[in-house]
Image (cartoon, rainbow, N blue to C red; front, side, top):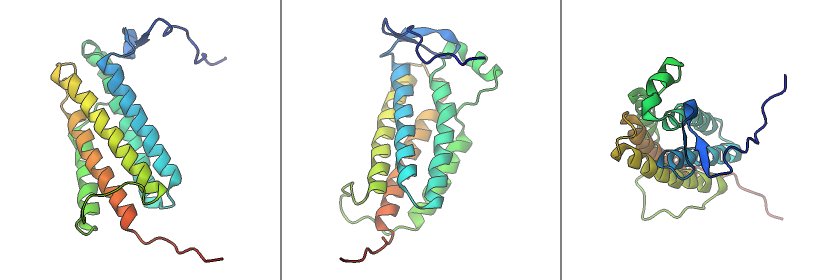
Length: 186
């Protein structure tokens, strides 16, 4: 059996499908939020691909995997949430946020206090983490719009993204302050 093509032509008129088939404009707040989280996952993937630190790579992959239920929740109209849950899909939980908070405490405890304003770009990995952090803050703002408009009954996505941005800032600092291998002259 042949897989369905990525080209459906159903979005050519400026609409797209949410989970369970509801059509909305491509610039709908729900689509904007989901797109920002998708960009966040891609930015995390870039940081993960650039790092040589296995612990950091593992953390970033775990976070990317947690973004999958977040995107599913965001892509589901509130009228379809029961269908979403009955289908076995997960929503963002307080436990997911607590996992981030545990990582925050661990990383923060290993770092000296910051000295002044941080300028992203010390190296590729920290720059990618700072990029992911800024995309995360944008995703947080997009999700806040849904929450304010009562289109997101679960409060956890906003809290989760807030903590994730904090963690990404700390991880970037951790990379920036870690010893770098010395390159030989020549």
